[in-house]
Length: 151
Image (cartoon, rainbow, N blue to C red; front, top):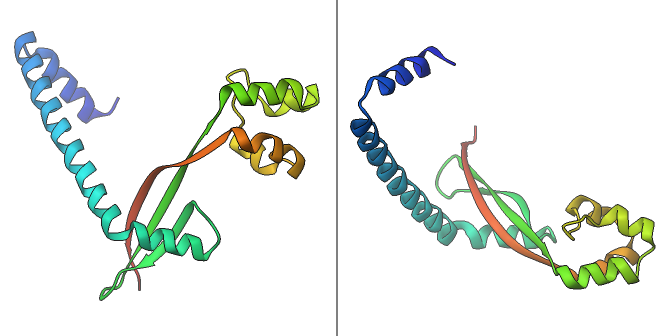
């Protein structure tokens, strides 16, 4: 533990339980408010810059990934990362693994939870990908923004 954490721990430890819970509830309320405000700011960033990021990704023949957008009238650039979320049709994937694939391949690509690791899917031969593709859904998981100064 760090010295600051030790001091804070001791301070909280010395509080009576009622005050400790009161302080915890106040912190939780501030935390919840901050989370809502951060979500709103992220919504605004999406509204202002998401289409630019998607256009740049499309120009690169990509649906997901990180792009750099230069902000107008400034020496700043923004890195925007459009993340993906992959899910699999469980019943269809199980049928494909059980009936259309060699048992060794099925064990290699499939997991007990009936999913395919994205790394393995991306590196799979075209014939395997063609069997797995109908069971795969890709959605946008999130978008992150970073601002940096350009010299």
